Image 1 (cartoon, rainbow, N blue to C red):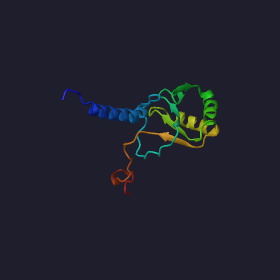
Image 2 (image 1 turned 45 degrees about the vertical axis):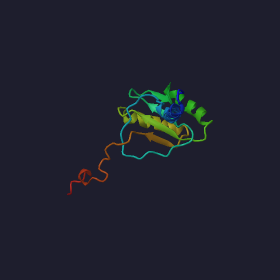
Image 3 (image 1 turned 135 degrees about the vertical axis):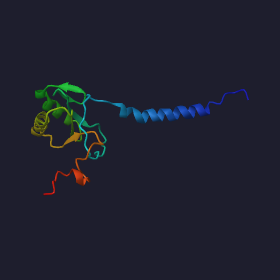
Image 4 (image 1 turned 60 degrees about the vertical axis):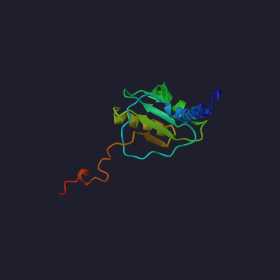
Length: 141
């Protein structure tokens, strides 16, 4: 037989196409921050892209990937939220950021009318004694 059978090659290419189509949305990155690690479970996924506010290691703010000034954040978020069905805000903060700065951002979001705020963390961290009797902080006396 002098003809080349391209059917297996087409099958492989279609499988690769599907793999890339599924993997491409997972490759999107935002503002680079070192998220704190927790033992909390992940929230269920939503249909639309989550609206994220990021606090970088040096305290700057970003909505999605666009850096914004502190005074402009609420106005821009309200304009974006007016066109969305979900009012949930995901707050990403670098682990090196002072808790006071995170609390300031949360307070500003709450004062701006955003009451559904979720923290974004990395999974697989120490559970701070959950299920570990030796790490409860109780001296037994």
